[in-house]
Amino acid sequence: MTVSETGATAGAATGAEVLRPHAEDAFAEELKALAAADDRPRPVGWQLSPWAVATYLLGGTLPDGTAITPKYVGPRRIVEVAVTTLATDRALLLLGVPGTAKTWVSEHLAAAVSGDSTLLVQGTAGTPEEAIRYGWNYAQLLTHGPSRDALVPGPVMRAMSEGMTARVEELTRIPADVQDTLITILSEKTLPIPELGQEVQAVRGFNLIATANDRDRGVNDLSSALRRRFNTVVLPLPATPEDEVGIVSRRVDQIGRSLDLPAAPEGLEEIRRVVTVFRELRDGVSADGRTKLKSPSGTLSTAEAISVITGGLALAAHFGDGVLRPGDVAAGILGAVVRDPAADRVIWQEYLETVVREREGWKDFYRACREVSA
Figure (cartoon, rainbow, N blue to C red):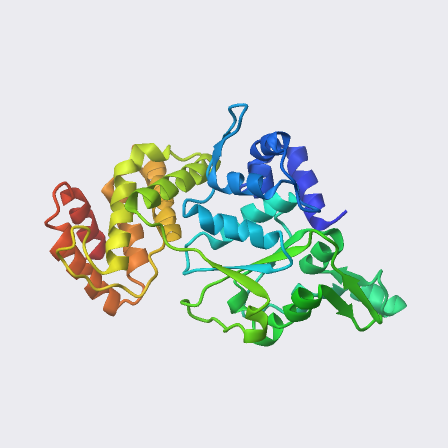
């Protein structure tokens, strides 16, 4: 029994609720309904057809009336290209600025295709080559020497052996020499084990989804050799304020239910306000197009808007009347906008005085922001 299996058993025995279920667990009923209604051809090793995978991501209503909630709000063609890529022998690279739902889409794609989103390598500056390839049980290694029993397969190696989808998050944060470990895996579909004079060959159904961004600090450019092994799909920021409000509301509601926070619709006005502030500062112009603005150093992504609203709901629940108000989100917005204490604070103050102060219906928000900014 593995550590994760032990933890799962212990959690089930005590009746503990998982704080963040894996996608295949959280949306198990939807996946089951899709599988039952799915009469289209499925690639080898896939749990659903490409059509059903796209429906799972984009949402829809099945013939039996089952509603599939959208997991991604954006151009349908982006999802179709991503799903189609996974049905070929090309790996998929989801590229975009921070907060464009790359990890979210990656997880749900793996859940729908393989029924398992947990074969994950989390990229950091300290990710070693062993995390992508394999490691060793050193007790076995010292006692019996190199052998398959002493070898500890990594997530990618397991995915190759079992015909599953592996995920590599934040690929550009991994050191370049470690990144290139993937080249042979993706081009030859083989993972050599030189210590044993053996290799692991990928079985049908194996593929890999990587996420990356090239606008964050601490990134390592992908080599041209590695980039050629991927089909790159760029995930854009939400196209309209309505799309972004819908995304934030839906995710905050999901997170809030797991934390017993007030329902997000109670704070829809503040959600719209936070989204408006983030979009205006991100775009460098007010919503009416009349005022040019300076953009702060942070990304002000949809993910950060979700964090601000979730934090505000927690304040409202524990220290207020449960209704999200301007004072509950003001501190979170300040923390998201002012990353550089010198330059960003000036930009924020100018925005408050030239846009927020004059906007009808925003007086309470203006006062709350001035109070926390003082």
